[in-house]
Image (cartoon, rainbow, N blue to C red):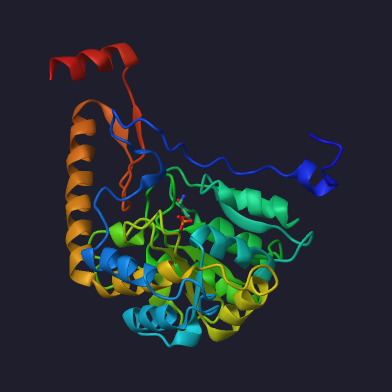
Length: 327
Ligand code: PMP
């Protein structure tokens, strides 16, 4: 605390990012990064772009990237917004769609721990809805709160983090319909959806709902699926009205959140589908193997559709040590 801090700064509850250790003598599993390198086309694009016009400001609207993303998802470029990592896109969506000091924003207890931080920053109250007995998002509980006029909107990751559990589109539709009735927005944070088995053609993504639900905003990141956590590229997909709202917030904060290198490289990443689909398959196979091995060791493991798993030991640390040692 300092006498120079505003009251707002004193009241903040900042997010604590996962540690990036300086020594790499162990396998790093925190922060859910991708173990494979980015596409070789991405690296080429960065090298080339570095020799171009870094003296100039980048395109404030990342038009080429929006076009490439739109093409990938069968949308038009006006339905795409890009930002400096999906954390920034999520942050912009709070003041864009949720009312401060009004009814609460609904999200799961437990979920991505940045959501309460943004609520605090933007003075939005929140209501944490417990997961059901299987650690799944409990759609009935959301619908009840929404229809009882107890919400300003809804946000959750799908798959949820840190459980890794995927909510099927049929259940998302039930929540989306209730939210739509109240003219509110449902933000679906799909940071990990590419790792859902069989999602190569976005079979589990809520992108397919955008045409029927003008109130759904899908937020995605290039940090996990595209192995580009260090580049900071996130994007949102949704109806043009929602995208316009994000642009209004962005241009009230920082007109150039995405640098030229990031914009150029991200275009190459989004185009190289074969490379990334191959990596995703390897990650899914590794997840299954780790899941099976942990289960054999007596861990209870939740069914994950993400690039991480949520497991808890049923044995003491001491006996686990011996099981690992003897294997
Ligand atoms: N959503 C979820 C659920 C996450 O786990 C993360 C990564 N910590 C993000 C969004 C943000 O990812 P990024 O800012 O790297 O795009």
